Amino acid sequence: MGDGVLSQDEINALLSGGIPDAAPADDGGGDSGGGAGGELSTQQIDTIGEVANISMGSAATSLFTLVNLKVEISTPVVSETNWDDLASNYTESCVVVRIGYTKGIDGSNVLVLKENDVKVITDLMMGGDGTNTDSEITELHLSAISEAMNQMMGASATSLSSMLGMMVDISPPTATLTDLSTISPGEIDAFLENNFVRIAFKMEIGDLVDSEMMQLYPVSLAKEMCDAVQNTMESDSNSTVDSGVAAEPAPAPAAPPPEAAPQAAAAPPPQAAPQMDPNMMAGQQMPPYMYMPQPTINVQPAQFTPFGPGFSAQFAQENIDLILDVPLDVTVELGRTNKTIQDILDFAPGTIIELNKIAGEPIDVLVNGKYVAKGEVVVIEESFGVRITEIIKE
Image 1 (cartoon, rainbow, N blue to C red):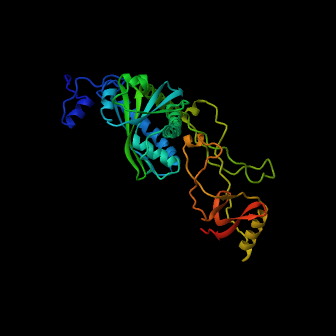
Image 2 (cartoon, one colour):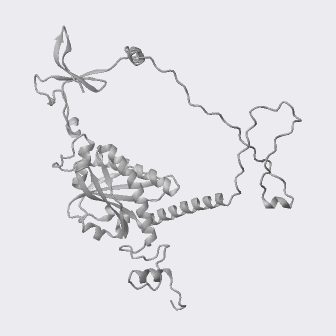
Image 3 (tube, rainbow, N blue to C red):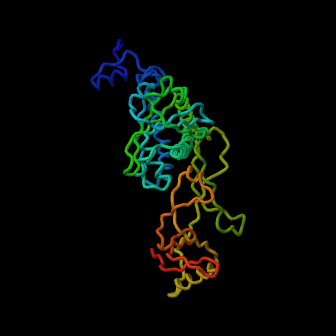
């Protein structure tokens, strides 16, 4: 401010009632005070937040298809932190999912989910209502949440590919149940031993989950993503500038007249002189086009013959007749039950499986997997049969 002119940073500081810094923060990666290490500038943190917001939007759509409930993931909060600060916020066990990038960008990221959230998601994926959360986390839960994260981060990688202008691919996720306060960060991923980027999302799944999910990035990967986004934006900007300074596009060639003139020597009707660029006055060649009036096109509404009174019924009957000989699979379901993988591996000749049907209760009849009737089992000579007792009408 020694030359008597206020800089933009000084004006902003005066308007907010503060005192301007001696020097503005370096947008290229200097200490911005954005987190524990201050290795990312404010602009880079904002860029990472926008990238995470878009990619997690795609991930939420993928999770919706798995749990069949409304999934909302809020705008992320980005900061720099270290392992001690992160672990102090988790007093209970949680599930840590590591995903590596195999193409496009170099590095990995780690997702941290609360144990109860994982139980709800996996129960919904396995056909439950999301309330079966009393049991302990098993390998089945970890396998299911790994598949869910694989679908989510696969969709996220697709969004990243568009934003970064390169193909991005991931490795299969690995999930682990752990206590962050006792485990060494290097056992999860080496980048967690130093300062890293923490992206916090608020995740809601129907009325069952209202919690927080963490995504952790190494600082080097965050900077690489910022540089890729910047390069993509510059490339798009240059393309826009190049197209903006191009010569004015030529008008479309005139359509030929609807009918050829019978005499070639006939003089054409008078036309307005085409407007020329002033530079053409200096002896430059005329452009190989000129304005021609477009012929008048006669447009009329389409006329359709009305259908007869019996057309609808006749049409429906004819279509039904076409498919009457199509074979369908009829399945008779005696009952169902749920078993864990361990229970199935323990199956042996003589094992008895208890079903959810009571003796004497009507059995279900399904056609191509659709529930259509109820019935009872009968014996016809040496074969089983089903006597239909009720037709299910929707």
